[in-house]
Image 1 (spheres, helix red, strand yellow):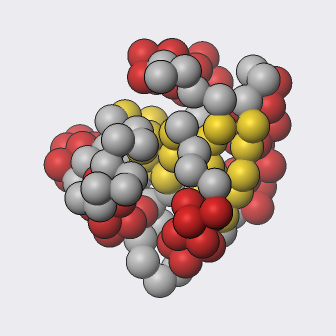
Image 2: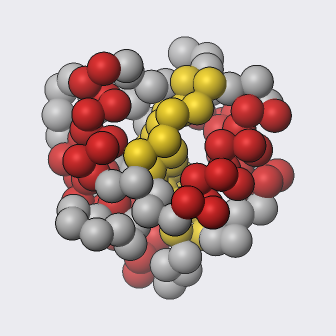
Length: 121
């Protein structure tokens, strides 16, 4: 399935702007959410082809939301790439165990992000 619509979930407005602009340059349609609650609201309205998920957020964190979505039959087939400042190998392993299909650390390398998106598409 080609990736056309991306939901970016991050509590940092700076990261949301950076990632949104990067994805739009590649011709993708981008929606943003600043927390798990907003993300779930967007998912109910318009199903994305990919989710970029921050980990450290107020309320439900990105690991928890990834686990919730990957176990939900409605969203289990929507790939999630965790995009976080948590750069320990244990964090990556944990993120993948929660159901993520990719893991990239901040600051985001545009080429690395594009490569992970292409690998999924």
